[in-house]
Image (cartoon, rainbow, N blue to C red; front, side, top):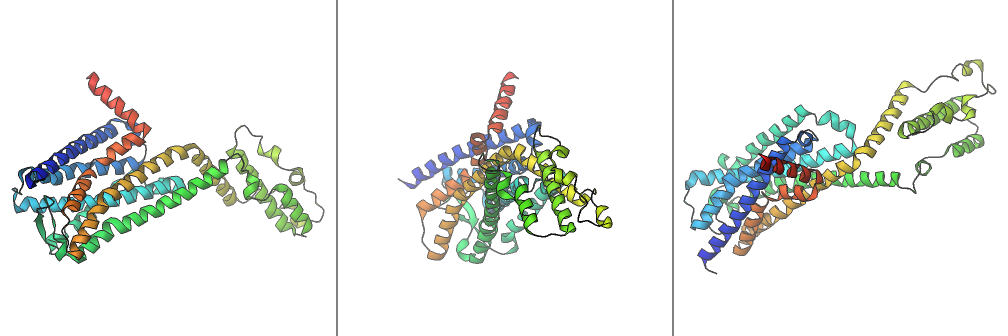
Length: 389
């Protein structure tokens, strides 16, 4: 295939990808904007919308100049546009990676520590996080303008990019900041989520009961009879049993009142073996802090049982977005390292990496469409509303 035919084929493929990216990301923003339940549902939707904005800017400022260069066979937009394309290309890479890592951390708190999530990811904090991401990544993407790296036009890839052969230290820095650190943090969050979900599934399985994870009341009585314990130890044991019964009452539905579940030996504990000073503490309730802690734990478990499927589904979507990002950008770094250290010009690998990098701007909205039933439903409502107008 001649060079002209290759450039036309590449330009046509990239044009289709750019059109799909614009349609998908604009539709995602419209759906999020029109649906109050979606844009107030979770801070995760704000981070996904942020990536949609990044992808739209990347299509307009990075993909379109590359398509024009591929169709014309040469770069005709000057050095200024070449520098702008390199800057936004690097900025889009950093913003995608860091937004996905923050999204994974948000999913971790939402599923594993929901009460902490309400404190950390409030509306103001989400705005601060997004502003901080844009500010910090903009500073990092300006490295070539500080003199660290040289910008040049790559004829084989129809794109302006850094001269990685002469900027090996910047290549290593970019790999660490854009791939290694964000992916390691995201992997740690998803591993913690997986462990938590497996534990929750085990607790709600039919073969699992409360006796599997803690001693039964009868076992506690046998242990207390075998070991001569002081009255203070007996009181602490009874307080612990009362907390467990209260927890079971708050978690259960249609269960008997706690007072009816308390064993008779706790209700009418005799005075034998107790001094007068000991008997004063017989009717005292458990300490307030322990009662509050028990109630907090019960509320937390009830929350997990109610919202776990929905939150886990969104975590799966986040994981798919992270895997898609890795698939789209990893070949680019492989080709760059091969060309930088082995000094081998891989034209076919460069074109494949180019198409995958452009594909990274289009894949997110369609993954959400395929994996999220809620997003599909709101998309149908939005499209039907437009047809009605």
